[in-house]
View 1 (cartoon, helix red, strand yellow):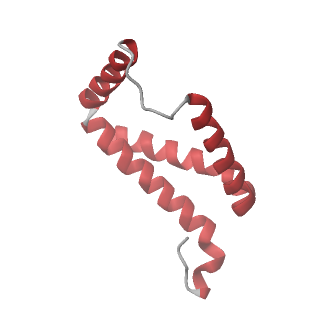
View 2: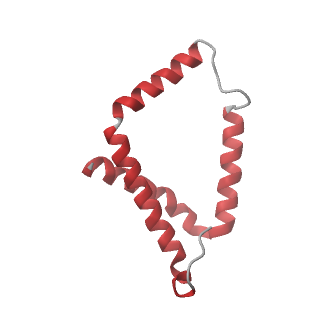
Amino acid sequence: MVVLPAQLEPYASLINLLLLFIDGLLFGFAAKKAVTSIILIVLAILLAGYIGLSIPFVSTTLIFSKLRTFAFTLYNAIGPIFFSYPIAFIAGIIVGFWKG
């Protein structure tokens, strides 16, 4: 966690939201420029799954369990603004695709 100066501490949630939007924006730029790579990666993962290759010790149940634990921990730490985080990230991705 980043420690902010005392005068910026009341704005920590807004700063996080802005940084999350910028993160989504950069992700959108990168994804638009790499659409072919993303398609090829998905095809490679599907092909690897078809022939029986997988990442050891990782299952979808484990991934969802870890994500749920992370989401509850984050919600308890920051409160109701938690629900605006995905919206800011998705808005950043949309703007990145549009302007990229």
